[in-house]
Image (tube, rainbow, N blue to C red; front, side, top):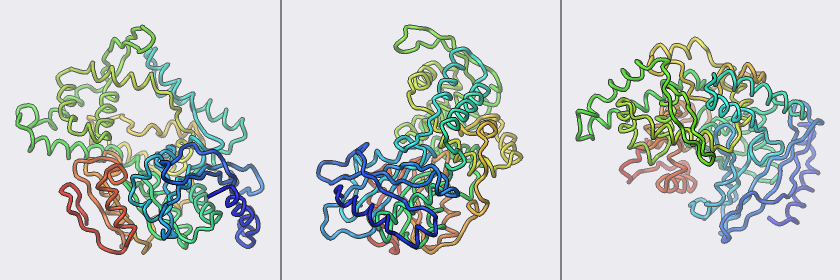
Length: 482
């Protein structure tokens, strides 16, 4: 897509009559430099989608959302591109273009990576460096972390609002409208939407609000909008652990250590309670030794992070056994290396989306019931956005209808890992209930995002795109189609 083509598209969008009049604004496209490019064997062009920050005020402030368009080399390619946007919420969607030449879909279709509003390469970007600074300060000085994080969130909110940013406009409904505006601005009749985790719910919202332009959905470990994840997060984590414990019981030759690991895990973490441990932490690059306090929550963080890492899932039983034996030090050293060397900022977009979409509808009574049911994880925030933070962030809830399930006959490919501690396979079963033309893939021995992050998953994506209504079959031992 050359600059001349972009100029032609811009002219067309400026002349769009009825659609623009109905919305009160005209989405525009502006060429821009590429944050990333595909392999040199593929043509890459980039642009900004320019839309109102808040569509209820169409004449107000505008924002710029970058997209990367990668062109298939096939002269007979299909006319329905794949549009990808990532999860989080708050992650950047653009990096996957660097490896798109390895994907089966580019053989027959163009690929579009679209950056959600408020994220890393969007203008504006809603980063909250204040929160990361507060976390490091709390650990360095052994101060209450949550209270410092909430104070940092207040400062970040005040700063962003002082810059004229409308934090209430960064939500799933507006992001879904961004995708529809991009489709129309690029004059694309039909899209295949592909996403992971949070973007599963976002792309379902696109389908619900703008069904005419959608050919299919490809959703990896999706979080539906109708799920209040905070009411499920400890139960989801616990189910993933149960899957791991069951495998360790049957697969391990050392039954003394691993035969009753689940019971020992629960007993040990329950006994810790609010106890704190000390670590003489050697801070990299400073030559300083810090006496850092940590507790059960940090140990649970390490376990959860290891489950998310495909290569580390097999090590989780050994890690838990080390914790029970009191061998924390090497794990905690690596954990705090990550804390202190982190250069990324907490996403204000994540706070806005999470607080308006999820926490606004979560019920504290149900959340607290999990702590009673799983006392060995009592008080643990799996998610870094929780009730106290949302009280500081102060954004309104999205419309209730966005949280409602809906029926659709569009073909959908759903995937999940059996050890996913966040978005369990159960969510795919619930989506399937409302979308009967969906097919489900279960990746055993995998956690979050198994379809987009494995070669096996790519084969299924290619077969689905070729004929989304045809029943898939699996010859792969660790992938079940149902």
